[in-house]
Image 1 (tube, rainbow, N blue to C red):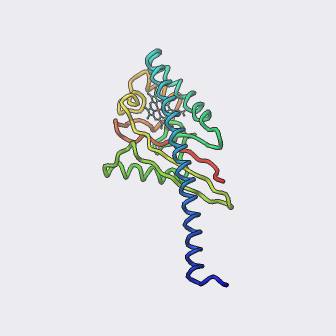
Image 2: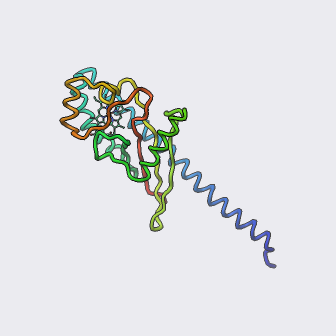
Image 3: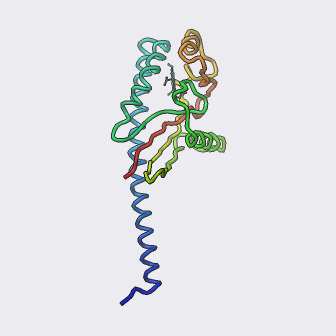
Length: 191
Ligand code: HEC
């Protein structure tokens, strides 16, 4: 007995749908994992920053951010994940976005100007290259009041001088509360 054409088509469609469902499930699981890593990263950075500002003032906190932010990013980069922060207007040029990250950051800004909730802006992308798949994830970082000391419209001395000394090409000032400062960006190879 041979399989009728319509039954065969139905079977092929079923297989296709199953493959999609599996990919979606895997992608949802990775997105959830990414959000967990980001929550921990943000919490660690915020507590180190707030602690340093309280104990030693914002000048010392710059040093913490200068050293601690890249270190926490490196620590978070476990289990195949690469974790970082990026932005359109940079303080540290090492955080420069690649082409995809730049277009997502531009989309986030456009969504915000149309009234989107910044805390909810995120993007998933699966990239295929030479038969290998990479999962990518970005989540927008809103500007809170405590960020303005170092990223606001008016940066007071001696903070301004220290920032200029450490980051002569600093473009990451002039923000207001609720703006998008940048995004967390994560990637991981997929099986
Ligand atoms: C005490 C000063 C200080 C405060 C307060 C501060 N930052 Fe920063 N921020 C820095 C420094 C210094 C860097 C560069 C870190 C590095 O070298 O990677 C930076 C870098 C960043 C970056 C990476 C992109 C880039 O421009 O290089 C993001 C995103 C960021 N800050 C967001 C925030 C947010 C959001 C807050 C508030 C929750 C905040 N910062 C508060 C000093 C500060």
